[in-house]
Image (cartoon, rainbow, N blue to C red):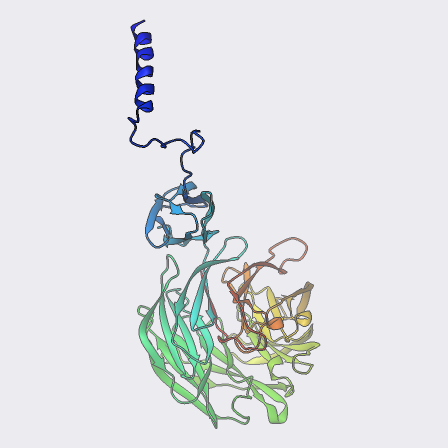
Length: 503
């Protein structure tokens, strides 16, 4: 009862104070009409989202270059503090997880804060099966992780390389510890150490000058002992051997093989296309004599100590001087066959190519003619898979209607080729392609020597899954794309023929 009396006693006092002006602000909490106003609405909002696929610790997210939060498990996350409406926000991965090859990427990570909390930032983490490196415009190497099962590229950063007019080649040491990039004008080799956990690249050992002449191509022996670089000047071609230090990646210049040439430098499209056999004992060079419409492949024995090259007996074939780009070469990864393709059409309009199979003598490295096959739409590139069961013929001609990939089955006895399923169209020019060491994926790298299809730009990397079973084992299907590179109409993107894979 006393509690009730106190309540009724206080009310008149409060009313009296109000009527006498005892409040410091007569209008507080009241409108002009005397009605109560709602509290002011908040104009700051939280930023967060969700994490999936995370398997380890060490992941650190960053907001707008300052607010960091560690993430140790999958699920929702929210950054501390809040941002005002109209503020730009940007969420990035500051530190990747400590698990080897685990790569996390951000989607919906940037925008402008509106009138509600941001909750749709997505962090997806994948443990990659390897890394792919491709030359991008502006003297950058784009790094990607390889998604298990599909091979789809996972963005993994970009790394600067010394400026060159064209990047002719890029190879990774078989150990996966070092990456070598060959540039032209100036002709030099850049060496990078590869972080085995996250795929990051660090320049090491300084630049290696090739000397006078334009470097055209580079190949490493499967043993990792030697790196071979070909250069062309006005009167001759040369192949220089570099001995590779397996521990440091350093290159020591060795013997130079020099010879005169019979075609105009820059037009010897076949020159410089060379491969090394799987046992690292022989190197094969493809050459074109445009004046006589002929080509040849010469085997060279590789000295196991110095890397010096000793020429064997060349095999010759008819070539098409009207379309030097239609001549290509590939070697079976099991060391059984060497393939040479010659175009039957004119530039940009190939209707077919003839692929000649040469049998490789395992003791002498000598070549003997085998079967001959015809493939549709030319064979600008030929890519063997590491299992020795398939060969991929890739053609682009500036028109996406005739750009495609043909999957070809390899007869294990004769090396004869037979087409697997229909051709797979591609809508971007490519100067380089390779299968990953597991044989599960095919990667195409965008070329820097011609405009992209339609002059609208394209992706620096495209991945395809290789079927291991079903109706058409060996067939490829598109599985992912890398960074889009816009190109203005009629322009030519910088870059070059450079792609390397580490698993």
